[in-house]
Image (cartoon, rainbow, N blue to C red):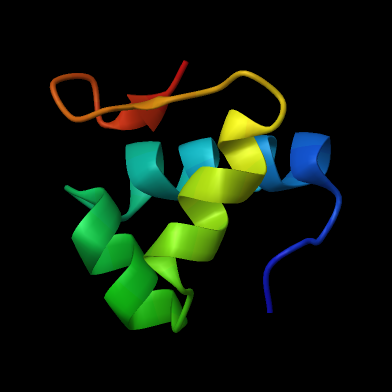
Length: 57
């Protein structure tokens, strides 16, 4: 279960991407997270996924 608070979610996702998953797609699949929801939630606090860095910045 992923955090619902966007700021905590950002930290959680970026840590998982750094430590466990080589891409956002793999993270979403393994953690059963809707990618569209995740992207929209983090864009609401002005963070965008950067595939080259494999993190939200």
